[in-house]
Every structure is written in structure tokens, then in C-alpha cells.
Image (tube, rainbow, N blue to C red; front, side, top):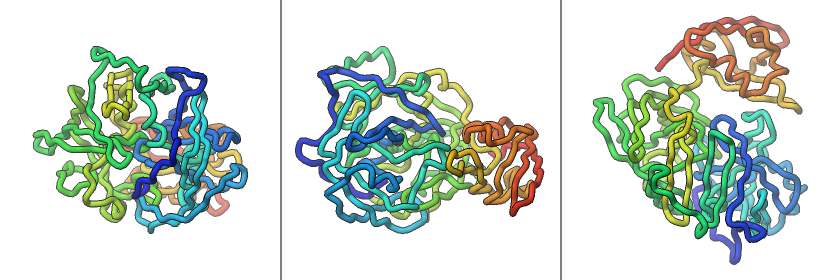
Length: 395
């Protein structure tokens, strides 16, 4: 997400401790994204998103900075996806980063100023930042989405088994991994396209290039949050995506507006990204040291691609993240037609009080299935309102 590649410090980088050849780390999957436990300068454990789209480790919750004993600070300018401006951030050097079984010393980290980008309210729990290339470049990283763990191998200790999956070549450029796949055009022909491998994107696939023909039927929507602000665009259904010999059908694709990708260089070698909405359908082994990725289909492989039927985005707010506020309403969606508004608080869903729910459970209840009837009690300007609607499929 940052627009530059920082030079690694001498003798910096992650390594396995206690002469181990591999280590297994439990992970948590939320919104298709991977949360890993990370300690900074041997302090308390925090939650970071494992994001191949990020080059330098990013601390988004600067409120914890006074507890982390940071030094070697200087100001830099970074850009990323979103409709806002470039950001002045702080570069921190000589940082020690730890996960179970591994340690990284003499590392660099970027610290965002307060209020720029926060994941905690989106996840309904404290989430402190993003970690990517600094982590992936040192290991072969096996990601098991179905069983919620990652396994790290020393590059010379990993044994590649060709019968266990499909080998996909990667090109590593400026700290990001790219690969070529084929996508279907509206006329059913296939087009080869170079895409960014992006475990930090929750959608299946996003296309940033205007020369790629979009599906005929699309809906305007909010697509996510970037360093430079909200990302808006359209969603459509791509008939087929081929990665190696794998064929995936009815893929929900995102197409950001030009204003949301203005900081993404037009000279980029890729035309979009493949996110965890696609990757979670595989047992994925990412091998930066050998420029390759191994994919093996898992239990999610044949599941239907879905999207947010309700058309609203929700944030978990309050000290315990147990109050839920509407932060976006998609035009013409079921909830827009029911007059649900931004800043409405969701009090209950189908008689379930929301203080007993997690944010994932809230989304599950308001996106149950097409044609399902949902009734919510909302609080707006101190008054309670009941809103009922039928979920409709727009794609």
C-alpha cells in the first residue's frame, strides 16, 4: 500500500529461533483476512493483518506507540488506495518484531498518525497494523485457511511435492508478488492478465485497468478502506477466472473508481489484485525465496462466491466493541429502500439483541440468503425504529 520500498537495514530480518526448520502459528480469519499475533520490542501481543500487498510493516494504531519504546523516528510521505491525500507518517528504525517461534531484529516500521486508518472497528476487536514483505521474504509460508494456521519453513528445509497441488510462478517486484491468470470477457473469451497477490484484500478479485472489459451488470458500492481514504467503485460477476489448471466460476469482481486508485502508478506491472476471497479456496504455500506459489483446492473451493446482500457496512464501536453503527448504505439496496441510514445504531436483528453478537454474527444475520426477511430495531437520534426488508440479489 505504500508507494515506495524502504531499504532493509544491515543484518535485519526474521529468522526461526532455537534452530528450528519450521514453526506452526495459529491464526484467526476475519472477513477473509488473516490475523497473526505480533509483539513489537518484546511488548504485549497485538493483532496484525498478514498482507502480501504491504512492503514495510505498518502500525495503524499509534495510540500504543508510547508503550513500545520506539526510536530513530523521521517523517516520510506515503500514498495508497483511497480518495484522500498523501499521508505524512513516521518511519521507525531498529525495531524488534516477534511471533511464536520467530524473531526479526533491526527492522523498520511505518507508523501512521491517529485517525488515518483503523481496522479495530471493522473487526470488532483490537487490530494494530499490517505486516507483509518483511515477513514473507524470509520463509516459505504455508497458509491453511480451512484449519486456521500458517506454517513457516526455512527456504532450504521446505520439500516441494509436485503431486500435492498446482505450481504458480511468481515475480517479486519492489516487495510485491505478481502472477498471471486468465479472466473471462463478457463474450466468454479469455484474457491473460498480470495480478498482484494480495492476502490483505478481502475481495476475490479487483481490476484497476480501464482496458479490461467489465461485466454488463454492475452495482455501485463501497469497496473498502485504504491508506488514502475510502475506496468506491462497482461490483460485477466475472463468469470465469483460471489460475493454472483451476477454474472458478461466478467470481464477484470489484472495479475501483479512478479517484480511488489515483496514487497507484500507471506504470505498475499489474492490472489488479487477487485477494483472500479467492485465496481462501486453496491451501496456499507462498514461496518468495523461490519465486513460486503452490495451490491445492480445499473445502471452500466449490462454494458459491457471495457479496454483501444487505448493502450496508457496519462498525463495532464502544470500549467492548459491542455496539454496531451503520457506516455506509449502498444505493438501491434492500436496506436503502427500507430507509436505513448512516449513523443508525443496530439494536437487534430478528429479535436478537446485538450486544450479544460479534460483528461477524451481525453480518451473517443481515446477509443470510436471497429472499430472506430480516427485521432490525435501530436507534436514530434517541428514538427506536423498526425496519423490515427482504434481501435481494442484485448481481
